[in-house]
Amino acid sequence: MPQAVPDETADVLIAGAGFAGLCAAIKLQGSGNTSFILLEKSNDIGGTWRDNVYPGCACDIPSHLYSFSFEPNASWSRMYPTQPELLQYLRGVAAKYRLHPHTRFGAEIQQAVWEQGQQRWRVETADGRRFFGRVLLSAMGPLHIPAIPDLPGRDGFRGPAFHSARWDHAVDLAGKNVAVIGTGASAVQFIPHVAKQAAKLTVFQRTPPWIMPKRDFAFSDLQKDGFRNHWRRRLFRTRLFWLHDIRALAFLGNRKAIAAAEAMARTHLERQIADPALRQKLAPDYRLGCKRVLISNDFYPALAENNTELVSTPIASIAPNAVVAQNGAITPADILIYGTGFRTTDSFSALRIIGRNGHTLEQSFAHGMHAYRGVAVPDFPNFFFLLGPNTGLGHNSVVLMIEAQMNYLLSLFRQMARKNLATAEVKPEIEAAWNTSLQTRIEKAVWNTGGCRSWYLDVNGRNTTIWPGLVAEYQLKMRRANLADYITRP
Ligand code: NAP
Image 1 (tube, rainbow, N blue to C red):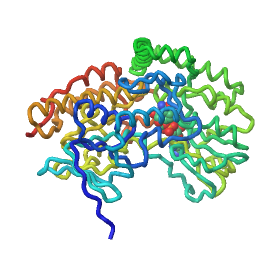
Image 2: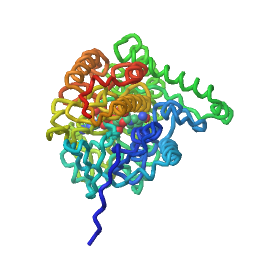
Image 3: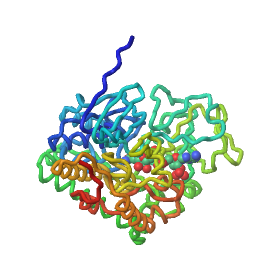
Image 4: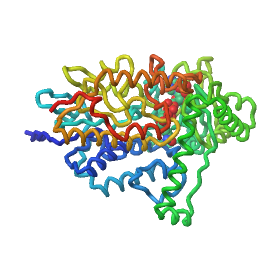
């Protein structure tokens, strides 16, 4: 008979071992708490940067900003880090802080239940393991469940078909007819690589993205030597921080700044695409910033290649060996690649998290996600989000948000320890007031008013994903927790 795996107990359970989970673990360690377990559904750390291995995958935030403030890396090879380099960075960080002994791989959370009597969380994983912890941190982020549109005939497609976050490197694209659906942040990165290999590439675009030039370059040895100097590196990061952070002011309602950026993006399009018909198809008809602004120097040129075609007619269905457009046009396809993004606004409610009195997160989020400061939800004692509702960014590095959230939680945990308190649960009226003010502010911002549909908005048109402010403002707000905002128990 197989041996039952014994239950494990720790003070803090952390769900996910990507940027957020690793940050949580390191900051807990730094505060003197070494009783934590990282639960990772996959067999490696890295989160997004482990899952997304499509050709050309890179981050559109500079490397010196898209990294932990407490773990700088003078050796970044270039301005914008590629996926392999980011994964290597995260692996190095996990090794340095000896996080592997704390990590349980293949631990896909099936449900998490708050046991009121014991004042602890019970987490059950798909392979039958059980973990107990006083605190449960969700470090999963909103972009990990691939969204594959339910197009008629989809499952009858005969050739290989895969999503950008599940790239099948065993599939040889050389000499094939490849169809790509989507022109979002991931697609604009892999399309130039697919265009180089495929005999024919057809890109199905629903909404043209706004694209700015990518000012990417490799750092010289001299520059890297410079970054070994603490102050020079800090100055560089601070400069990058503010250059990115002030963009929020444009997104929050500065129409002149948005118009100036739109002019830059239009010039970029005109310089790279000579064909007026193709240019027209690629010209967005909504305000810049409404969807994530993309940066690329090779996406437009790839579409201008002879073996590439951009189809902007909506897709009607998928045939066994073709994509059928709504005007009846049939595009033969040997391989189908979905660059169609992620299930975002329901990604958290898909989790079976059961709080006080059997209340589920799905019930709490029935009318849209919400959380106090993006971290705490009423009825869920000692459960906290990292990168939770309304803490995503369209303009700066989310690593900054994760660090701010951990600083806040450590402040809360410190105060609880001092007063010998076991549980904290945000007061409903405090959370409601926070969200009312946040939603009032976000309603005027370009994500809501820019005339587009994006994953920032949920099915009710509510923006439950973006932080409507400067990161600097969020950092200030998150410096210290106010224990009075919470219902606490000894
Ligand atoms: P995405 O930005 O949501 O793009 C999905 C694309 O698929 C869009 O062009 C969308 O069209 C299209 N699409 C979806 N359903 C469709 C359908 N039924 N028919 C036709 N087209 C359809 O997804 P993503 O590119 O994977 O990026 C998701 C997020 O990941 C980004 O917003 C960003 O936050 C993050 N990301 C970041 C980086 C980075 O460099 N930091 C890189 C990649 C991804 P519509 O626009 O019309 O909806």
